[in-house]
Amino acid sequence: MTEPGALPAYLQISEMLIRDIAAGRLADGQRLPPEREMAAEHGVSVMTLRKALAELETRKLLERRQGSGNTIRANGEIGGVYALFRLELLEGGGFPTARVLDVSREAKPDNIPDLGSDTPFAWRIRRVRSLNRQPVSAEEIWLDGRFTETLAADELSQSLYLYYRETLKLAILRAEDRVGVDPTPDWAPEEVGLPSGAPACLVARRTWSQANDPIEFSRSWVNTSRARYVARIS
Image (cartoon, rainbow, N blue to C red; front, side):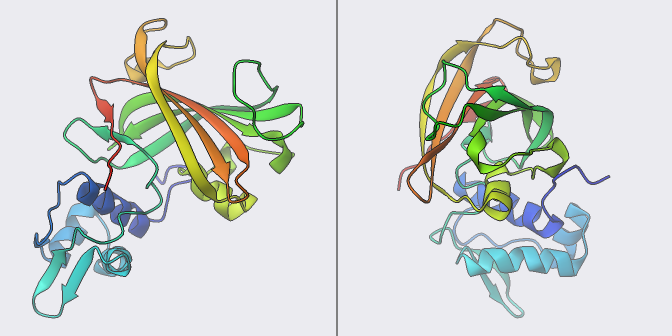
């Protein structure tokens, strides 16, 4: 069964490969397996796989030559839908997914930064984030209420930034992360593996829109026995 808000199959594959390239699990010059073999491994048609590989070729991350196979080029644009998602499995990479726990309209709490407007409410989204289907963090997002009067869990994409761009016409211009330690909240599900109140790695993020306007604040409590925060500088 397709998960609510899941990316198309070809994008899931391309994003997985992009994250593996960024993590160094796929090296420059490495030859990928034959396309039919890769398609079978991912449970998709060869046509779908080729569409995924075309995404990498567009980003100059893949060299495709008839009769010579597909070769990784790790000096291209390491971007993609999850370019700003900084959690990786301990061995590197991992395809991100999200399960929404609840969405609610709340008065803006005093303990979050300014969200850029005088609108008195914000949308609170709580989710479980997973990598390769393993839960790794509990996440709470606050989106300023001025952008929409309604927000339903079943409308959200697995990538909130993709939802912002396509539905709310908001592009993320920049983000600021602060990493620290914080007690695990009591709403975090058992599947994340963090007991309520136990110290956890906290990643607090503010994001700004294309208008250079603060729009969102999020907190992620990360199980560091399963995942780590990674920021690469080049």
